[in-house]
Amino acid sequence: MSPRLVPARDDSVRRTDHPLTVTVDGEPVPGIAGQTLAGVLLAAGRTAWRTAGSGAPRGVFCGIGVCFDCLVTVNGERDVRACTRRAHDGDAVTTQSRRSGDPGDARAGERP
Amino acid sequence: MRRRSVVVVGAGPAGLAAADTALAAGADVTLVDSAERPGGQYHRMLPDAYGARAPEAVQHGYRSFERRVRRVLDHPRCSWWAGAEVWALERRDPGGAAPAAPAPSCPPPKVHVLAPAPGGGPRRRHVLEPDALVLATGAHDRVLPFPGWDLPGVCTAGAAQALAKGERVVVGDRVVVAGTGPFLLPVAVSLLEAGSTVVEVVEAGARARVARGWLGRPWELGAQAGKAGELLALTGVLARHRVPYRFGRAVVAARGDGRVEEVVTAAVRADWSVVPGTERAAAVDVVCVGHGFTPRLELPVAAGCALRPGPRGTSEVYVDVDDDQATSSPGVYACGEITGVAGAPAARTEGALAGWLAAGGAPRAGAVRALRRRRDQGRAFARRLAHAHPVGAAWPGWLRPDTVVCRCEETDYATVCAAAQDPTATEARAAKLATRAGLGPCQGRVCGPTIAELRHRHGTGQPPAGPTDPGSHHRPLAQPIRLGELARPPAPPAPDRPDLAHLPPEESGS
Ligand SMILES: Cc1cc2nc3c(=O)[nH]c(=O)nc-3n(C[C@H](O)[C@H](O)[C@H](O)COP(=O)(O)OP(=O)(O)OC[C@H]3O[C@@H](n4cnc5c(N)ncnc54)[C@H](O)[C@@H]3O)c2cc1C
Ligand code: FES
Image 1: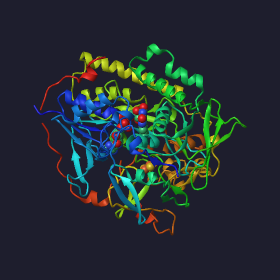
Image 2 (image 1 turned 30 degrees about the vertical axis):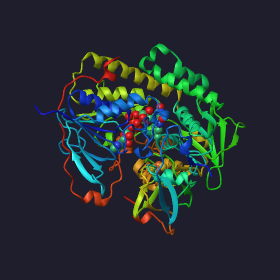
Image 3 (image 1 turned 90 degrees about the vertical axis):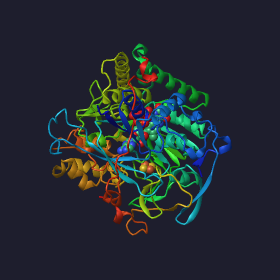
Image 4 (image 1 turned 120 degrees about the vertical axis):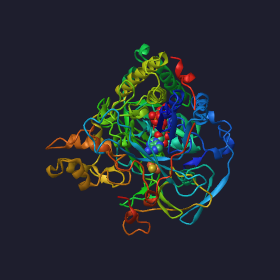
């Protein structure tokens, strides 16, 4: 377990947290308002959530919407970059896979 | 007389400064950024929802930045489009396809924007037709591949920075920050501040060369002395935390089962060839890597702007601009890291000049002369940094045949080399189709410069198209757009209002 949110009580920026909950493949994951989905997933200790074609796990790489490693499906919308999408309470996140045959196989819906 | 309208794309240090001076010169300004808050990469702001009472704790130069943000965003002639993406530029040259020299009177391209609808709902499509366009889209980390760089837990230095500064998430407990360039320092310091243990900062460049680049001939630094001072202060923080800052070493592999558990570094020579027997492994849960920056060129290329090779060699190119920050495309200006990498102060100065001139401000006012001088010092600083932190030509020495080079399509090094030597695939496009490298969701944004370099190096037969050939940066869609969004008719551009012309206080001093 390693990535995490700086605890509010120790945070030099003196923030106030408003909790929210998203689900990831049906499982509830807590976060705070303002976080990106990638931030929520990382702070919950998840370092990988997408599966590349070879089956290799992927999580955050560039963190700023450039690499598309962090793609997820959010409330049915495919190929959302988790690192640039703000989390909203109740967001239903499903993970994606590019490995053929996997349930979340993204190749069918891939953009040109 | 109708006021000039200026669209500025990107609200980082460069774009914000451009908006500020364009407003000061009397133009109507539309400032567009895909982020929800202005600031770009350098001034990445915390989300409003955090209610942070001391945001300056993690921001260098926060007060003057905040003043500028307020001055620009509250200006009656500025419309600020937050969370809005420019997804295409449509040239208005006769015929549309790139004529050799478009008429100088030709207006800049139409700007296609996808913006959030007020009150939520699906994003709306807008088309803007400004009198001048300022591009300030910045850059992202460049990362050279190494075995294991596709393991979770390996991320760009920028990702660690964005998460720590922008949402107070630390990427890991035990971190090695590695690559080359001064940017490794603020990243390491942010991680320390947020509570990680930084095992070491690993700079591939040699100590003497780096020191000469940052600090040599200090009288030439001029306005950039502040940036050099900021870097020295950061090395002081590392020293206080007893974080070793090692020179002449590079990350050559990351290992782990399903995520990174161990990083291997090795001593490298000036050309980044690995010194055998110097490999050393360290237990980590995150490796943050950056080997410089790659400018975001899709919009400049779509606008038809000429490119030029950067000071670090052939695989890095930037937008070519003249003394006025004007590109080769009429009515299109460029500023900030898309024209060269010298840090936020230099980006700001370029932006200030670009915005003022794009808005039709007097080109020879005294304050503008001072701006040009500072801009030239910024350009010189970019050359210094590039010279201090070159990418050594022998870096592919640490690749293995099965090392993934294109992360999206998982194309390996052996496949890229084989395609480069294939006489039937000398054209970059044919090689792309054969290997799929660069054809994945990121469209080659991450591996593009690497593939170009490897093809250049291993190619036989005809030399591949030069890197300044816009083809390799051509992406028909600068940002992903969904079919439903494309199908909806565009909404009208938002309206605006009046004022007078003088440079804002930050730019009127020299
Ligand atoms: C992740 C990251 C973090 C960094 N952090 C630091 C730091 O802490 N300290 C430091 O000294 N340097 C940092 N840098 C270096 C930084 O790039 C420069 O110092 C500075 O921010 C460059 O300013 P700029 O205005 O040229 O570009 P940027 O600051 O990159 O701003 C460009 C803006 O353009 C927007 N944009 C791009 N394309 C589009 C589009 N199609 N539509 C709409 N908007 C668009 C982006 O959202 C962004 O806000 C960082 C770089 C990266 C990549
Ligand atoms: S991590 Fe690169 S796009 Fe999200």
